[in-house]
Length: 113
Image (cartoon, rainbow, N blue to C red; front, side):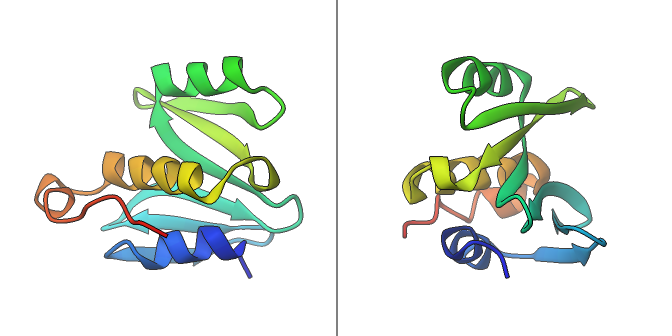
């Protein structure tokens, strides 16, 4: 089961689809991937802009690490024990927003926990 804060944030977003891998759960919105959860390490991988990825990793390398870049986006690994729920909500929402269609993002504000 995903981290409680992460699960509440995901549940607050519309059209989230889950896919299961052997060691992770993947999260997509309308067929576009925006995140992963690895329970064994209590980490998530989230889609971000490349500039946001670089800023997060350089500011707090003990919490964030570069995962990969693809399609003009920078994916970042987030160690869940190192982030507060409100910061996690912003990161997950941004990852979701970067993948969701514009008409959907216009309707959905940042979830509040």
